[in-house]
Image (cartoon, rainbow, N blue to C red; front, side):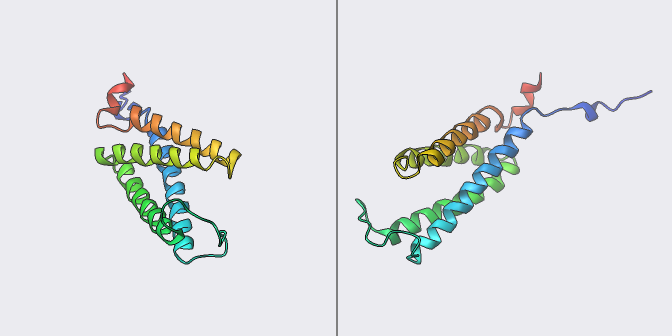
Length: 137
């Protein structure tokens, strides 16, 4: 009986890459939606809020561009591109900082998303590179 060795070629990092891509995609989509809502000056956001830097429209453009960049990075992660690995780590780190700064507004959600970003970074660091299959042993 002949067994094809490629059948048993297990990639231990594939679930981590799928998780990182899905989570980064969700965050990117939410950032894009929030950004568009901020640009349109939606009533969802408090109208008389004072911002230290710029205004609601400016932060809407920042979030919209960030969300679009995160969605492009997700495509790169699934194509196993090295640039996407590092860009995904950067986006997750920036999102960690944003969640930390928003902890006063949404404590439970901010903490959950903070730790999801930690897991995304861990997964991309350990399994996102070109040599990730060498970890299988």
